[in-house]
Structures are given as C-alpha cells and as structure tokens.
Amino acid sequence: MKTDSSACYTGIAIALHWLLAIAIVGSFLVGLYMSDLPLSPQRLKLFNWHKWAGMTIMAMSALRLLWRLAHRPPADLPMPDWQRRTAHLTHQLLYLLFFAVPLVGWAYTSAAGFPVVLFGVLPLPDFVPVDKALAEVLKAWHKGLAYAMALLVLAHVAAALKHHFIDRDTLLSRMWPSHA
Image (cartoon, rainbow, N blue to C red; front, side, top):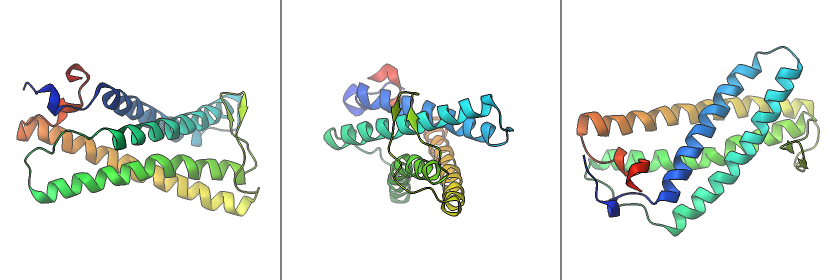
C-alpha cells in the first residue's frame, strides 16, 4: 500500500508519536514491575527513572500537542461515522491522559514526601503538601489512570491493525516513519 506523502503526518509528528509510544509503554511496564519490589536500591532507582519518564512524557506531550495544533493532520480516510467519532474521542482521551497520569503521579509523590529531582539534578517543586492520606488517594488515581491509558493504547493499536489488515487502507502507513 503506497501512500501519497501529502496524506501522511509530518516527520516531527511521526517522531513524537513513536517516541511517546515507546516512553509510555516502557514507563507503564517499569511501573508494573517496580510496584511489587521490596524496598531496595533497585526499587528506588526504578521509581526515580519512572518519575523522570513521567516528566519527560508530559513535556513531549506538550510539544506534540503544540505541533498538532500548528499542523493539520491528513484528512480522515473514508470510514463509518461511528468509527471516526470513536477515533477522535480516543485521541482526545489519550491526550488528556498524557498529562493527567504524570501530573497525578507528581502530586502523589509530593503528597508522599518524595521530591521529583529530574535526572537527579533538577528538583521540581512539590505542588501538594505532604499528606499521607492524600498520597494514598492519589496513588490509586495514578494507577487507575495509567491502566485506563493502557486500555486506550491497546484499543488504538487494535484499531490501527484492523485498518491495516482487514480494511487494507493506508491509515497505519500514514504514521509510519518511511512515509515522512
């Protein structure tokens, strides 16, 4: 399936899409793994990495959103109206979660009394006071929102694969790097 380059996303949009995809999946998997580890230097290292990844994901999401607002995406492919509405809603929810998950995680770590020190050198401000009860609520919210994002990512991937293998249209190839 060859696609017209004008029907593809820009190289920057494609790069941000795939970098965020890798970062989000990696951060989610590390989050799953580290949460069951006993207190150890390894667990502390992974928690710090997870916090750095969250802040990086949030910054990259802001760049991606700004790029998206300044550069119109390719026109929608022909598809039933319910699929188009579902795709747009899914994208909107994903963008919301790109910010909500790291922000709630940051609030959680602040409430728990553990600062975020980006890459071990740049301390970020706590934006909620230390409060153990609030930390427990925020921890549950962070986990729930992360699982919601994982489910939406799986739905997004399933829809892209459905378009590629069943509908045999160019939807997936428009976001593939070789077409930038």
